[in-house]
Image: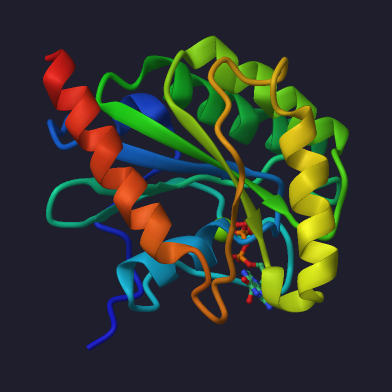
Length: 198
Ligand SMILES: Nc1nc2c(ncn2[C@@H]2O[C@H](COP(=O)(O)OP(=O)(O)OP(=O)(O)O)[C@@H](O)[C@H]2O)c(=O)[nH]1
Ligand SMILES: [Mg+2]
């Protein structure tokens, strides 16, 4: 049976359960495909997705065998009231800056768009956390391989200076599952790195 509910859910980072399992967080603009990315990783439709931006409004945790995938609300959706939006953003920031078992961040960016201010702001936040981060270009099924290659080069050229330890972007599609073998490998590396530091 498909479980549509997260294993834990919180509207306040301080109320999150204290778990010793490593956590991996999905970060990005509203509607970029964070929840879909989690569903593809899990192989089941567990995280709620929507055509309408602003779907994920809490910090949601999905347990896998060795780690927990964290679905965060999206940044920068104008139609959600300003105070509401600021609350979510503060919640995400607090989570990212203070969660002791957070071992990796995926920064998701829609492959069809060039740098947006919200994403540039997120690069500063990510650098402040000192946690390994990988840039993911999502929705690659929505345009041609040539267009994707162009955007990949565009992003790769700009990464140094924006992130502390940039590695080349990974192109993904939650629809045709492009890129997910590499994503799973990277999660394993992050978990190993974190455990060797303990
Ligand atoms: N074609 C295609 N559509 C995608 C892909 N990933 C996500 N989508 C669609 O994009 C829309 C938003 O996806 P979500 O996964 O809800 O995005 P989100 O980043 O979690 O959005 P918020 O929670 O609102 O911030 C949905 O209609 C998804 O079906 C993809 O790889 N390919
Ligand atoms: Mg979502």
